[in-house]
Length: 218
Ligand code: MG
Image (cartoon, rainbow, N blue to C red; front, top):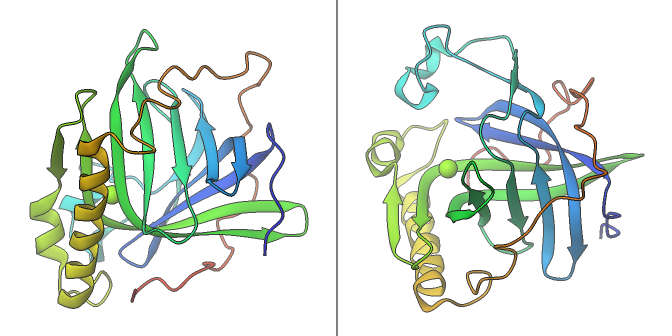
């Protein structure tokens, strides 16, 4: 049982894909309670990531050619609010446009876990590639279906049974989203970050830490 994290705290947000740590980002805790952990990734947040030297998305690069080293990067575009909830295999992202207006919800299908180690708190998320994009009028669009199918059966990613479970999770969220049920009920769509929050520093650790959840298997 993890204690609730104080609003305003900076925690590590780490994402895995294909059994590989892909990004480590410092994110700001907005709220943490029984409904989940809400975090803010500010525009320009310095982060670590694996990046293809040729600029291709790694989903389109054979896994054997993924870079061994991390690159210094930054979160591009507007800041984003992310809700990670215990017991569900997805997170919900509130995207805004360049003027700060709400642009839509991104549903990232993933397994995730919150961890603490001394004074360090983080979320580890294992990305499952298939996603949903929900426009403000609550229309659902699947994303990355082709890449998701391509990786099904690869032991570094997911089995056919796991893929079916991922798709089923997406269908559950789609029903919530199209019905306008929480968290797609308009909550947080007008969120603005606390102006006193400074941009977090690039994490000095977190790249070598072992994953806090299994990288394959549901
Ligand atoms: Mg995804």
